[in-house]
Length: 241
Image (cartoon, rainbow, N blue to C red; front, side, top):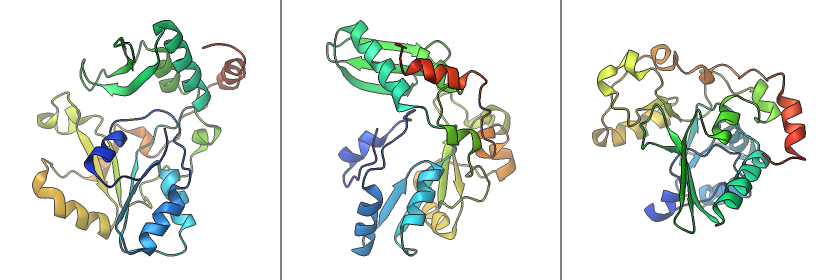
């Protein structure tokens, strides 16, 4: 998974869907600065720490920059993902064509990891049964910094924050269709203007921030480092998944 730029809807399609693995920033900060210096609009998306990195990198503020982060659980190790893929490819005897971490065939609340292979074969398993998702959601393979994240706060440096609206069935049950309800937090005047510009094309309801995030602890709290995390990662370096 890597940060790239897109200028068409077709290119943008690659970015859709949750990606539960660390993304490679590459030269995207430099590319964003070049576009901004040329007077172009830039929408830069990423985890809160990646948005923080961009804003530290840029020498000044830009009127045409829109930043959007997510409520981040934490980012898993690329090593664990790579070993998981290797094991699935070996089992399927075919190369991996596509990976979808939040497939909704069984609904939004019980999402599945779907792998598609070059042979036409598919693998699909729900979040509490797939090995990779169980490892991720039990916090065994997150980056060390994610256990003490400095970006867990209400006051965001981004213009907009997107997330799953966990607890929607308690806060706004009429908007829960088990296909996925998004939460959008508007953090700045720039974000407010953009949201107003697109609001006619959205189905939305306004709620106060505390109600919106009460079932999403990742907004404010880092996950606790499991006691077996270091032992797990040490074994992962030398053993198959």
